[in-house]
Length: 20
Image 1 (cartoon, helix red, strand yellow):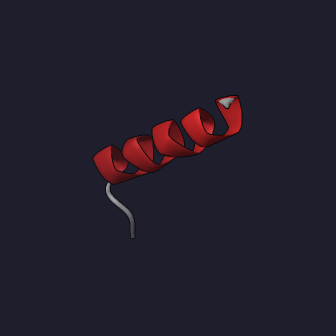
Image 2 (cartoon, rainbow, N blue to C red):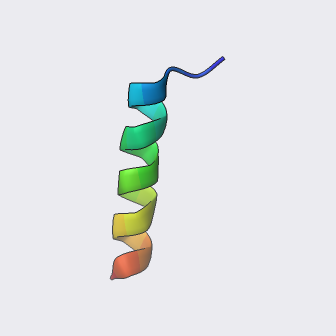
């Protein structure tokens, strides 16, 4: 069970890393 906020943060970081 992963909290929503954590998921959002991870997604943001992932998108940022792939946005480079």
